[in-house]
Length: 376
Image 1: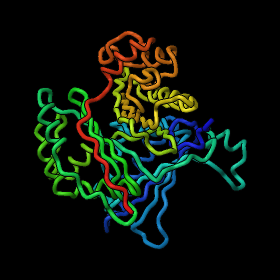
Image 2: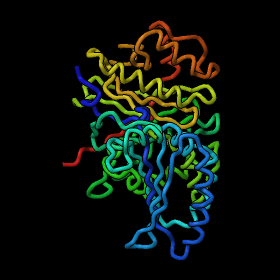
Image 3: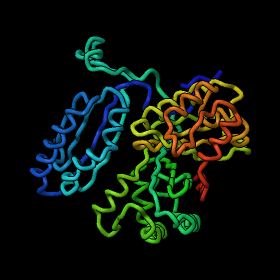
Image 4: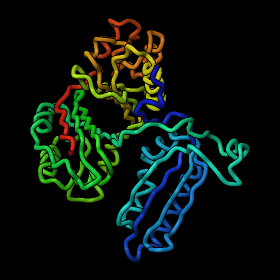
């Protein structure tokens, strides 16, 4: 039996402490404004549940370079905070101070040093990551936004027809796959990047074909944005960000009968994190099933929007319960209790027939799924 440590995996739900690292490069003369903005931000974040500590560091080699680190009991409270409107408002004053930023998130696997005793760990809260996870060098991320009702077909045609950007970013970074889906008036764009995600996103944003596409869909967006205004564009893409919180995949190559699906799980208000955590746990249980048809599962979360991107062998109807993220009828009922009944349609997918009806509603419309050739 393949264990989870032998699969390609990432997770925000293993209960381990989280270390967040923010690298900051300041504009010349912005030091005092930056320090004032940081003081306001740290006072706000200190009251957030799950936050343990933070540090502000300045480079001894280049005074324009700064490092902000924070430690959290676990990843979920940080994810809820960083995706909140409160966080968006708190970091706004930083935007005018910084030339460039880079955010990194790490779970704590090992600790050494005199202060890192078991008693100290218990005092801090959280736990160490239970084992080292296996990676594949791929970073997964998604964006989601809604378009004006009635414009869905126009937007779908625009999204399907654009020219793919050059996949090579630099010697270390490359676009591997872009999958676009729609569910009613909601758009999901999932990307897979080999190397540096931020460098890849900046590369894509600079491509003329992508800029033309973004301008073409602008009139149909429910949330206004002005791509010529840096702050307006930044706010739009911040709110559209749909980070991956869990990923699990077999190490073996993809089966020829595998098909990609994006399943939309509209959570009850305030239940998005609980729903994503439940689906992640059930995907990990299903991974022990040697007859499983799920080759890969990635869960994306922002607020109460939960998207589960699955690569399924033989189609969703080959094993409806597993395809729906339920390792049995009782687990399916648990999922149903966290779903918004109006958006979900009510009932409980406790049988395969009921689960198939749910999957028919949840399965997003595939607009395009483009892969880049693997570099030699």
